[in-house]
Amino acid sequence: MKNDKKYYCDVLVIGSGIAGLSAAITAAEQGFDVILVNKEASLEESNTRYAQGGIVSRGHDDSPQLLIDDIMEAGDGISNLEAVTILASEGPSLVEDVLVKKSGVPFSRSETGEFEYAREASHSRRRILHYMDMTGKAVEEALLEKAKETDRIRLFKNSTAIDLLTIPHHSTNPLSLYREPQCIGAYVLNNEEEKIEMIFSLYTVLAAGGLGRIYLHTTNPPCATGDGFAMAHRAGTRLINMEYIQFHPTSLFHKDADGFLISEATRGEGARLTTKDHTPFMDSYSPHGDLAPRDEVSRAIYEEMIKRGDAYVYLDLASYTTIDIKKRFPAIYEKCHSVGIDILTEPIPVVPSAHYSCGGVQADTWGRTSLKNLYAVGEVSATGIHGANRLASTSLLEGLVWGVRAARDIADHFDGERPYKESEIPPWQPPEKEEEVDPALIQQDWLSITSTMWNYVGIIRTVKRLERGTADLRYLKHRIDDFYRKAHLSPMVLNLRSGIQTALIVAEAAFSNRNSKGTHYII
Ligand SMILES: Cc1cc2nc3c(=O)[nH]c(=O)nc-3n(C[C@H](O)[C@H](O)[C@H](O)COP(=O)(O)OP(=O)(O)OC[C@H]3O[C@@H](n4cnc5c(N)ncnc54)[C@H](O)[C@@H]3O)c2cc1C
Image 1 (cartoon, rainbow, N blue to C red):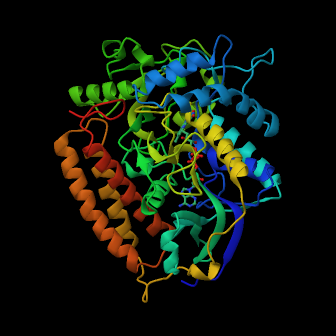
Image 2: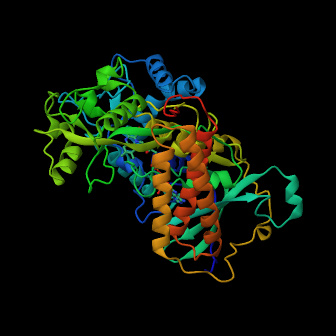
Image 3: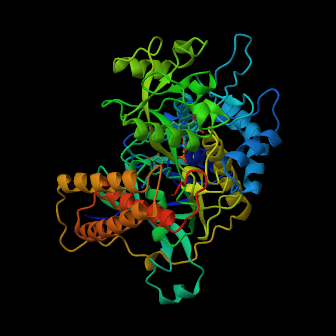
């Protein structure tokens, strides 16, 4: 695998979801040359693209304090108040400025032209802006369009970041040991040309999204293999709160649905969860009933399923909502219809699925991580906003706010110096003899990872399950590392390496925390 290309930029952004695009656009506005990479063949591909419910803004009878209170309550006492306050006070004006005015996101409006605010679980007010039930698609398309129009941004699709370039680790200069460790770019696989390239940057913004794909059932698309967490971990960056994995209570239960999410906004509009015999059950689990926080709803569903031996429960819009279902939830209607379920007349079979990582690469209020010149924004980061459990529709907002803040912080501290000679950083060293990869082995390894995570590091955890899970994952990691060192590198191999490393990080964090809190429920 030859490696001949080198690129240079002021700011390298890894990931083109809402966080990466917001950072890239803002950095370019500040006059920086930006390279943004996405490992997928389409730049749109991201978790952002699939967000349905919407993005938190400020409703009519709303205030920053009310939002702060709701986020703190959902976070189960361990959210970072400083970060939450920034989100609540700066978020709505950035939605207006960056998404509405600069990028033209067509959020849904009422007949009088006013924004239509939706409500979701655990929100005390209607404050969520949405574009029907396709908010993420609308946001992603608008931001990407804006980035494409911007001369200073080079967009590289089909480019998989392999490792962060850091000194002293990647330097051949022994004296670099005396410098503060720092990030100077990344090794990136050009998927199409099968070459490993070097991107040198003064600042790197990690915006590589989530990790849902390490679980058997997930709402996340295939790109969410936890690469960002694994890359940061290998570079010695601090990760926190990794045991807090949010399970979305309601994904469509159907063999052809691949974890398709049924938005919480359906319950905000009155839909109810029932057992298979059509009995609502949430009132007996929480005073908030069907609008209880996600972790409580997921556990309640899981318990009902176990108690009754059922493979799913129902989410019933037809019997309980008074809205125009087809107009308000067209994508959900279409998807269910495509697999033979008419949500206007019948309930939807649903199960909980891994959805969101509340923890991640520890980032301060400007997105700075423990590694110099590396920022982390969006789902891969942990600003502490989500604490032990995320309040619905706050993650798109966090990606937007921290993407912008990271770029502004870079502008405030920019000195343009490269603290190394380029000749000291060698190109990627491939193994002497590369082995061809057998896809069947990769598939089997993924099956082992995802079922171990689902059964042992899932919605309800026990010390015994976690002990077994971490031991199995450690063994598997050992084997995959060995395989990786000899393999002909491809996206498939890189995803697997990230998946096992991130799975083990989550399992070990869960094993070492014996206190149930938020999404981490251990008995
Ligand atoms: C089905 C679904 C519905 C959701 N609904 C909502 C909602 O209504 N409201 C809300 O606030 N949140 C919602 N969320 C969560 C929210 O969408 C995500 O948390 C958010 O979009 C994350 O944004 P991000 O920019 O951090 O990451 P992403 O949007 O996931 O972007 C990450 C990017 O990094 C790229 N990448 C990953 N690894 C590499 C690598 N090694 N090299 C190069 N590129 C890489 C990916 O391809 C992708 O482009 C939902 C999530 C899902 C899955």
